[in-house]
Image (cartoon, rainbow, N blue to C red; front, side, top):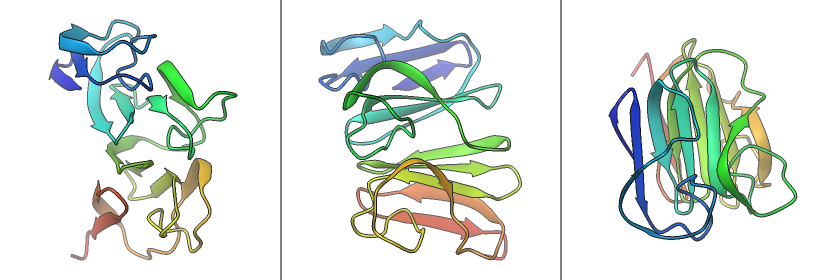
Amino acid sequence: MMVFSLEELFVWGKNDKGQLGLGHKLYQDKPTPLESLTVPFYQTAVGSEHSLILMGDSNLYGCGDNRYGQLGIIIDSTCQLSPTKINGIHGEIIKIACGGSHSMALLRDGTLYSWGKNDVGQLGVGHTQNLHLPTQVTALNHQIIQIECGNNFSVALTKEG
């Protein structure tokens, strides 16, 4: 996924789990506009087979693989072919990140939410059970200013350094 401007979001490549958000599972061999959401777009993040899209109004959407809850939504199937709104995050989202099969969202006030696969503790919630809904990470006693995810791990930079 690539945001070329706040008004254009293009997607391409592998799409067998619907991770491009186009409403189907066909691969795309050239940049294709994602037209199912209204502008403005703010940020995107991608995992192995899922995608998050943060809109300018701080609404968060997810599409693609959801076997481990990495989309932060409860659905009957393991895939979501079109962007679906993620609820349960209370505050203004300023940064999103995806690992292989987990996701995180950072709020303006420094609050961190995580969800998805958690087999090695990558969600930072004190256990190793998968979470299908966004859950606040409370173990950090400092204001977080930056987040990143790797395949099976997460990092957070605090205001204190």
